Amino acid sequence: MKAHASERNIPTLDGWRAVAILMVIICHQVARDSVLAPLRIFGTHGVYIFFGISGFLITSRLLDEEARRGAVSLPEFYLRRAFRILPPALFFLCAVALLGWVAVLDRMSLKEWAVDAFFLQSYVGHFPGRSVSTMHFWSLAVEEHFYLLFPSLLAFAGSRRLRRIIPLLLVAVPLWRWVDDRLVDLHGRAFPGIFANYRTDRIFDLLLFGSGLALLLRDERWRSRLKRWLSVPALSAIAVVFALVVWKRPPGSLTIEGACVSAFLAGTVLNSRSIYGRVLDWAPAQWIGRLSYSIYLWQQLFFVSAFQSPQWHQRLPLNVLLVAGCAFASYHLLEQPMIALGRRVIERRRRRLLQPDPLRLAGGLRAG
Image 1 (spheres, helix red, strand yellow):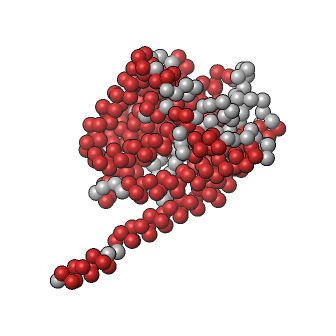
Image 2 (tube, helix red, strand yellow):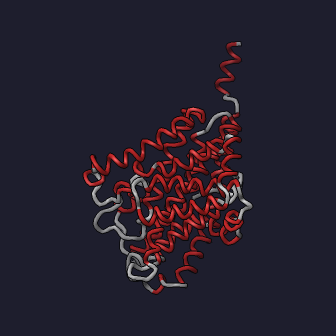
Image 3 (cartoon, one colour):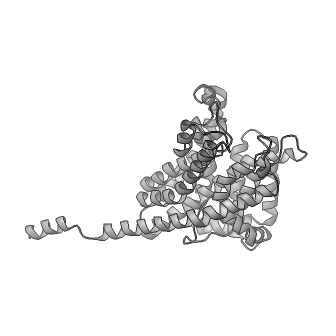
């Protein structure tokens, strides 16, 4: 879902972010009794596209770092993520709490605020009295769990071992879903009220598909094969499969979706001048994609027809303008300055690590 301008640009990813956030917004905007209600089923699957993008992008960045420096720096990774993700999210939660305190929104309990601030909603997010204003934080929780776990796996195992580990995990997670559904019923026993597929352990493979794709594209033979195989007709067929899977929900649907999203990403990244690539690189799509994190945070306050009767500021077209304004302000006044601050903190850390330790140097001189 997230990248900044100083990083190597990967074609079409911002366009895919735009597709994903528009799917979410349509889901939240369309009322249950509307003639457009069937479109609502695609909302959560827009989040799944975000997951595929995140897995692909984060793994690509980490592999670039490993190739450039010989290893992955976990402290630098976590600093980058903290400065990128936490300020907008915490500001949003504080704004929601303040609006609840002045009775513009439902009042936010301390438990609700803490669950969201510590990215726990995918396991303890649903309880009596919870408002809809922050229910979308389940997906941020899943991504944060991925950021916590996967880079450590790459750092300690290395990219070569990871090529063998990811296929095993891509088998293990769907198998665990099947066991949980039919034998364990963990969500019913341990996590009542939680949607089963909001739990990180059940949908971790949706991010791992993107990670596997990033590893696969490091191999020039696979790059050339995928570029040839994933042409416009092939991607069109995959899009039909994706829509049918979302609509019919056959067994193994999440696994099929993860594979489809990876194919979409690979096909358009490798063939960025195709018709699909050009649409995704269209300037308005790129603009929406760059703002997608802030849009995702703030849309929950203004696109509510799927959950409740909208108030005056939650009706078209005013809600579109309000979300755009909030996202634009968040991106330029908070996200970008905090990303820049994070870069400065990392640069200072690097310089400090490169400086000789005076005590160690003095000890060496005495020994000499």
